[in-house]
Image (cartoon, rainbow over all chains, first blue to last red; front, side):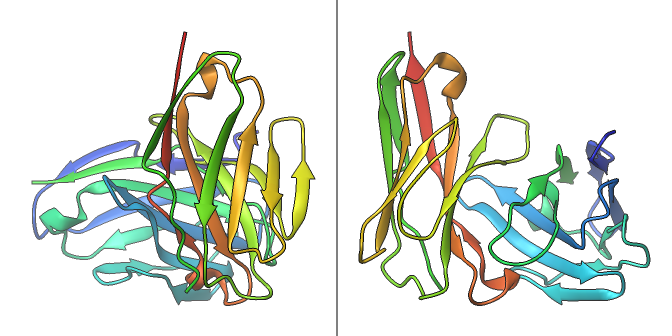
Amino acid sequence: DAGITQSPRYKITETGRQVTLMCHQTWSHSYMFWYRQDLGHGLRLIYYSAAADITDKGEVPDGYVVSRSKTENFPLTLESATRSQTSVYFCATSSGGIPDTQYFGPGTRLTVL
Amino acid sequence: LAKTTQPISMDSYEGQEVNITCSHNNIATNDYITWYQQFPSQGPRFIIQGYKTKVTNEVASLFIPADRKSSTLSLPRVSLSDTAVYYCLVGGSGGYNKLIFGAGTRLAVHP
């Protein structure tokens, strides 16, 4: 049981290209999250989803698009990648409610040239 | 927003107790305090969570004073494997988009 997986683990792309990062969970958790982690900034919430077809913005949503057609998947798309989006991206899940425990994936390291 | 302030880094030695303090002066009434641990090239992992007074589990203790404007994560008898970044997270009353991870505290445990 993998729990939460992210793919790809590493990605190099060029400015202006569209990139989609995948997140898949096997727990049927209601909530899913996308964070980015940059040196000196800790983790910053990009988007989150409370259930299929329900998403909401986090702290830094600009330049990103999310969708959630199925409970287990929560893809993050950079429609036109910029160098400032070079970062490590983490997906997380939780069963719901606040406070709650979030379970993080292994991360995707994205480099935009 | 309940912003947190933690020391940037700390050093310790194996077998010592480590206390990491987090300041959260504008914590809201319904906010909880949660600590996560992150190893290099891995996602953060939940350690402990509390609302007031003291919480203890098999890994750590969390001390929260009555005014709740700060909290202290206590790691008993650390080992080299406790070398990691520790994040203090405050939230709960404003929705998930109000949860703020600080920059974290980088703990280095030396032999």
